[in-house]
Amino acid sequence: MLLPADRPRDDAATIARARATTRSVARTFALACRVLPRRVRDDVHLLYLTFRTLDDLVDDGDPVAAEALGAVELWCTTGSVTSAESAILADLAARHPIPRDALLDFCRGMRDDLAGPDLRTEADLDTYCYRVAGTVGLVMTALLGADDPRAGHHAAALGIAMQRTNILRDLDEDAAAGRCYVPRATLERVGDDLSPGHREALLRDQIARADSAFDEGLAGIRMLRSGRVAVRAAAAMYREILRQIERDGYGVAAGRAVVPGWRKLLVAARSIWAPSPAGTTAPAAERVF
Image (cartoon, rainbow, N blue to C red; front, side, top):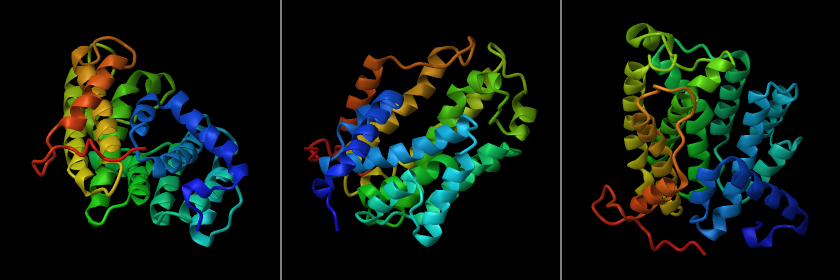
């Protein structure tokens, strides 16, 4: 079995690409990765590269998106390595108990995006968010380790919370692209005018749902064997997007809610030293080098 320190030399380029991708396109996640234990840090970067590559292909409507998803699905069901992404997953699976059923659900979510998800109810949205993001939490848990079987449930909830936050942050961007990830039943109940200055009721409703999912997700961080500091910091920084939407007046102006860098660092630091659900301080002294 290959340990991270024993990787083949020709794998260095892939690792470098994975690190660079995280730094360039996921700045909040990159900050959290800095406090991951060194022994899993590069594996997390590799996992992010895999998910990000597939997600970008789907978002861009790339003709090879379906083929790339098919290669991952083939690896999940037969173990055959036929693409760069499936090669990374096979490499990770040599060191971690990668849940292939979760990866298949992720691919299903990506295919939903290719077809255009049919989101009628909040339950439909939760299913979609589970597939495209809750599954990421499940695979991350496999890398970080957890002895409590409930950890997966909480990890999926945290992924759902982050995806719901993405949806609220990107309302205008999605609308410009002709996409809407707010369930039709919710629009009928709260109001279907998503234009700036007319969506406060909708945002209040959806922020409350995202906050509830964050609470559910955070409750499981103490169940992780490693990476608790990083996951707590990532969740805190991501959740701050919801607070920024509130500070900006619940969508009174168009555009993304942007959390200043100094505030991200502040909320991350606060999360590290905040009391855990068990009443003890968060494991700030967890070894990261």
